[in-house]
Image (spheres, rainbow, N blue to C red):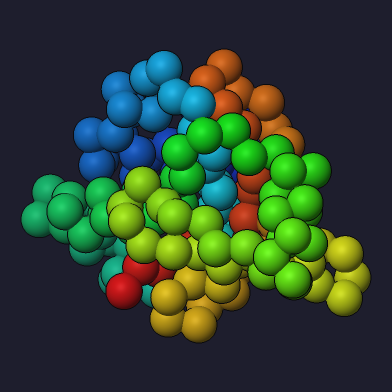
Length: 143
């Protein structure tokens, strides 16, 4: 999905380490909230290294699939869902958890994970052959 895209080399490496390349290259459609390299840079180095090691594969897979929503949810659709939801929209992830989307005061879309962590969409509607990618500035974490 995001292979070769600038600013996503850590995500691509993580997807490869988790064995999710075939899944994300599947028919879809998928919506991927893709952490940028800078977002992965906020994760402590020891945690990153542990996740990318073979022993961390299950945890890495859980985190990565928490960034994926089934179906194609572009920015306009997401904004409509937030408005229809009275200011927030609950997105069920492929991992099974929930991300809560809201529109911030500055008009940007934010995601809140199940632990209260927050990420901001920094680039929306990056076209992919089997869905859409929204770049986010923080890695969101499932429970």
